[in-house]
Image 1 (tube, chains in turn cyan, blue):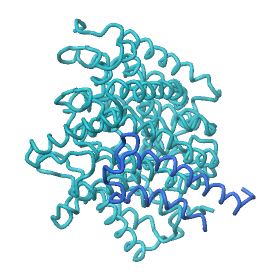
Image 2 (cartoon, helix red, strand yellow):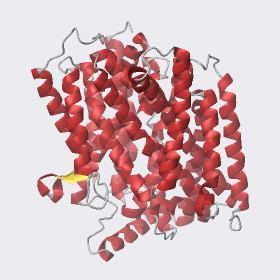
Image 3 (cartoon, helix red, strand yellow):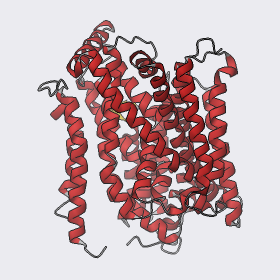
Length: 507
Length: 62
């Protein structure tokens, strides 16, 4: 099982992994607070200034999944994989405009989650439940995907085993993650994110300097990749559309995936958690301006998909392209360092995601439905316990579900997540929508989105409107349009009864 | 409000795919599609920064 292990790479990998795990436990002492309080455990006491928020939100957005998945799509079909870039350009104006407002309202009323806000705003328990349910549902496959990224690099280290033993290293990594998240809460990923980012930037800088120098410059890399992709298109007889630029049929999907993913991103519980832990609107706005630095790194990482072609890497599974590129172009110890940065890059979001989902479960499902009189101490204990359970759920997704299916689930996750956008964002800027209307819109959006994604073989993220090839649109956006339409009409027919809720001002 | 253009401009440039969906002209070996996106990222930052400054002037009290 360890005969083929790349020993220098594995040694470096394990050393860094142990180091950040220790850091995760030590983090409990950092910016000291009572960790039996959900506000302290789950939001770091809301004391993270611009710099810490930068690492935390950045760690949330640019994950191991991005580092493995985006270049793998670029490797497989080229320019289409770059939809991730316009997507990250769209998210920052959204972050700037929406979240300082949401932070101010949640801070004033002591809300910890999106569900808290929705209940406070509309006084509708069903809508709160819908928002919480959607968040938890969409988070599980997302955490699972982080683990797939981690498993890829462990595989690249040469660890080969059968059956459940194959998942042993992942299981160990996972138990460590679960334990220090349980102990330190949001402080752990915040602290680890520093290390992770420094490592990722070292890897990216090394890759963009050394690899092109060895392969004859960027012009040669693009030419080589273009030739491979063109040949792929021709060989497939038009079934695979690949190239350095987008084919006409790819343009509408490219645009709608970018817009839809951007609208869905900040609705995830972990994104809300990361943003609400900031010390104020000022910190959030400063981050909207400075976070795009990560997008530069993302573009360069995505280009590794092309570098793999230029380096002559041939693999049936595109997700192995980047790990193989590192093994081919770098000394073993540096490949180990790069793999460690990817694996640690999976730990940070996995921890924040499980905390976000756990906060949401404790406050917006358990408390209102099971035990309305739960005291804050028990509420925090419940959330800590749930953070373990969510991770076990994600681990089960990995163990028992084929990877291909998990990837499709992630796309479905975005389609679902975007359906709470009206409930959260419209409420901040408009009084036209009622809780009942938004709930009706959510039901229609979830139903339509799931229906459209339900393909004969697998889940599909796109739907050809009117059967036209040129109008392939992201299901999430089509369902969101229906959601908004229904929400608006029902809100006009059944306006908010001021008595029914605890309508708060947004000022 | 007059600074709203700085919020909308990067969004517009990001989704105007036909504008940049081509190979030529190249820059340092990068096809247009790629160096356009590489430049758009700092431009987006700059736009938000300008908007932020303008906003401070509008509401000096915050």
